[in-house]
Length: 440
Image (cartoon, rainbow, N blue to C red; front, top):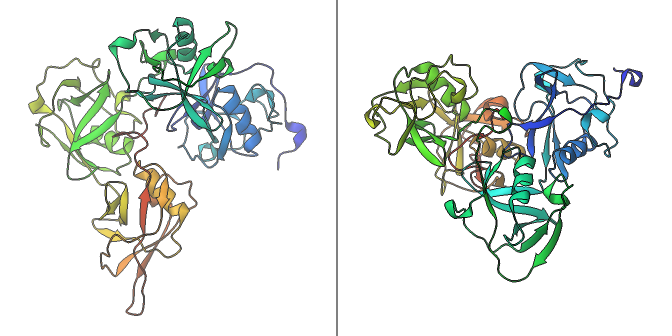
């Protein structure tokens, strides 16, 4: 046990960021100190601590706290442990804690938060572009473009960590919406758009849209979206990345199983079975964004591998690279990719999961692993596969993959009437992508 007398107060504010979440306002909590990002241990981690993080990040209210590396394990330093906040502090380092770098944790205990968010860019091509919307009273409102100028754009892009704005709404469009609108007025000294003055507009108004100039804002690494196209399932196909608002392919020069391993890991598709060359899944169209990719195999993003600058290549689409990943979960007989009967791959064959003790925790893990949002239903019938041998599953709900849950092999007898487990998820959290911000 740690005695309270060991806890200290720090005086200097430290930059925070949230990693590996679905947007800028949820993820693993990381703190910048001595030139390095490090994590926060989840000992004593609760809603008061999350409230401070969400406030400091201009992300609205804390919705939930996450323990046991819910958003994945960090790397290098663990900077904070035994954090205790009243909930009113301006910065996480104003809360009581052991002292920077003092801990008895490892990265399996990395803390995370889910915040409500107060501002978002919606329907854009990446996290730094889209229609501007704010959260007020539990719902999202668009911002009308009257009174909106360079100062508001600059402040918002800075708040989102997106560099300077591209101040031309004619060159890009992210759709309009029937959302209610606000006219916004910002004083010069406000640090967040949510601190500005809002006036509700009853008549129809045009919404504000933004796009960043620099994709590598704040010297962070830009991680493009990744997808597999024209394969037999979500875990096989031609590798494509999103850059500059356009999907493009990867050239197969130097493409091998180590590169495929990184792709399969990024999109949560198990391990790489084969690396495909010579447009095995058909030629793509448009740009070829990557060439001469050389990975060690343990990278967390394809962009962390050695490669020439984006767009530089000496290839044609006859050399488009592809992968076949093992996958370890699939949904069968559903109405789309995000619903159906749950089957699990263990070894070289697919087996059903039975609905014994099947509930919200298990459905949450399946939807998360499939990148399909949140569970809408965890009951229902999508036909029966008829297999006698399968698995009983027990999850805490925090796992990132069904394979991390407790799996018990089960063989039905003639007297059993156990149905196969099924799930219906809300839909993709981000189209054709795993974590866009896997290393922001």
